Length: 391
Image 1 (cartoon, rainbow, N blue to C red):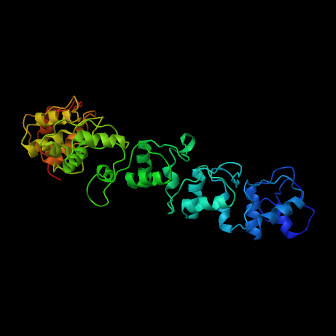
Image 2 (image 1 turned 90 degrees about the horizontal axis):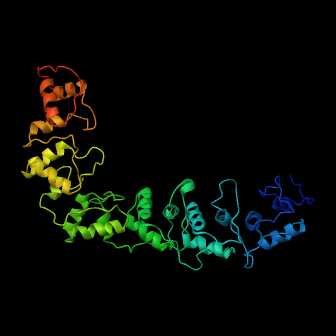
Image 3 (image 1 turned 90 degrees about the vertical axis):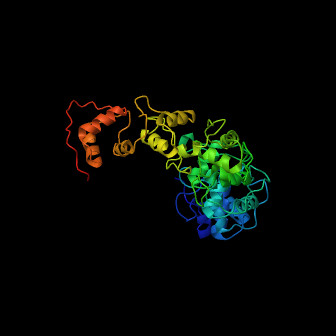
């Protein structure tokens, strides 16, 4: 531990202490005094940085870090948070004046101080720091989400974009999702921050990336449902393949779209069979719901196999165990609504009894019909023919 200076001047003691409180720990005369300490002391003592340098020199500190530019005339207490290194994990570390200031430093400091990035950049320059981006303009308006926009990951796998870097399209979507904002708004803010994009933002992207036309609707961040693509294409009068290509350019997963959409496509691709969102989402584990196929068949007047075939062309597959009836029946739809087992799961006695109770059918009838629809009933039991009571 370094000894206190011989001077008993309270200001000398404060300047010589690392925390500017006149107590240990003390600065070492054998180590360089960080420029940030000089500015911090000037702000606390309300004096010029040159006066702090003079005191430190008199106390035996010969290696004091200086900027390339002349020392500023004054330092405001509000300047102190700006010169703390935001990338430091432990304790207070002063920003190194010998290194260019990163974009991350500017944006995190701006977010913490609720100031615009341009304001923070100007102040750091006035204090003698060099910006890594040179004279590149920054937004005047504050935005606490800016650091999230330039962070491409979290933890040890994360990377911070710097001045002039290019971001990947899917990272724009990821940042927008984390900030719960429009991907178009995120893209425009990144452009304002000097980050290069692999695409040119277009106001029309708002419509392409909005999961419905309603105010406050959710945004698409990853895989757009085919129903959404077809609906937007219909609204804009553009080919679905063109909409899919633009969404892929914006970072969404590539979508396979039909060359010639059919009149019933929007109907069978919508969960409520009304041609509107919510759209059917691809289930890559258990495939299509037989109940949806039967409901779609009744809504369109087509056979279940015809509906399943068209959905398969649109990228929605039917599990191999599923068995479609020749004709859609409301009774089957009501029965399947009581079954929470997929074609990968076995249907046991308790499931049969529950469905029988909810539908008013006998357990034997339920078991027989579920078997006919492709469900596995492995229990070696004799199901009663007595009908259950509706609950």
